[in-house]
Image 1: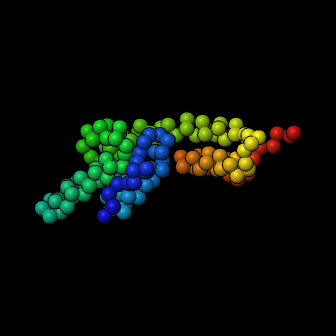
Image 2: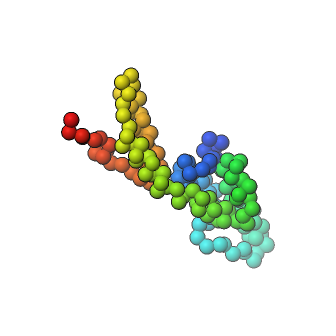
Image 3: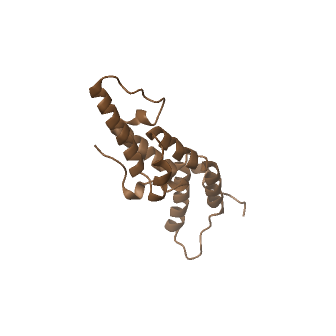
Length: 152
């Protein structure tokens, strides 16, 4: 079983929330723990053996979330009683910022200019980076929208 993400993939804030969310949901799904962050709370089983497995999975889901965030976020989510509460708290903190982030990135894309001493490859890498950042937060830009004709 894989628990958590690589250090560089840990949640740091709004800047990497969407990519983190995708990775953490896949990690939880891979470990058959997705039900602990999605949907309704799972009732604890009555059977002693199933109850023991449920508690183990419950704690493992929390552990995966705690190990997938940077240290400054651990005190915030460690107070939560369930993995679902942890996940929803992080969503509430960072998913709201996507609109303003998208507007900022679109403005940066609109204003990008090629410097005199800059290579074409470097310039296109800047554009591609901004486009990828927008795509990560769910704001896809079509190829035809990447160029601008100002009539000069």
